[in-house]
View 1 (spheres, one colour):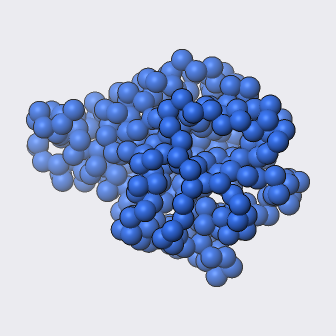
View 2: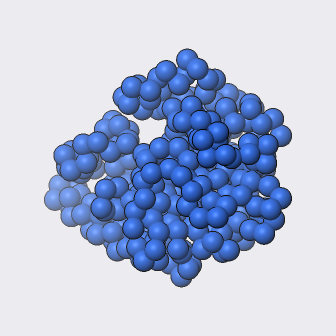
View 3: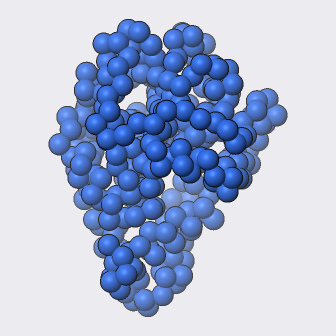
Length: 302
């Protein structure tokens, strides 16, 4: 079952943000943690939800970045400013990227682009949402376990959607936070998004296959619970294979990356006109994926 309305998921676990861009709050006996950073424009919504849901902001001690794309780090600068002692956690590769001026510039440009497209630029008038150089934090890696008191968060390195992607798993709740690396539950389907390296994306999905999952908490379009959550990663694996076959077929028709990109991107836009990512950004995503697929076919990549 897919749930797209923010609110309480289970005891100590909350879905915050909005349907298209989600963040989660995990409450332990000792402290709370936010998982993922959403898009910048949801900042007013999240702050209002703290109040509406009775969430104690003073207990929030950590924020876990699952990967460093613009639509997953948007509220980080605001929360760090409001909670100065907030510990920001991310993979080593994510911190490497977030230390680059060009990456920060892209985060800010794309964040405003999407906010403008959704009529939400007013959030920038109300709050300071721009990323600035100098945001730092701690590094997490495969096998790390973060203890919050009564609940723990296990870290898996799951590159492929991005080079810096990680996933988090809470065994006490059987809750998985795979971000876009686990598949995006758009409408009644799953969007495969192996942006950085499609082969590694598929390998990372296999790494998560055997986890017991009652709640699959996605970064876009809400969370999944129950029987569908238990099969979500297996379903994502099958959909990823189908999407790869589509990209291979389209590329092999012409062996022209740009023609394949246009065909796939236009078809996606026709089928998903209200998808959260702007068409020009989505075209760039397809360019990355098909370039990798073409490299594998032509023996230049693996």
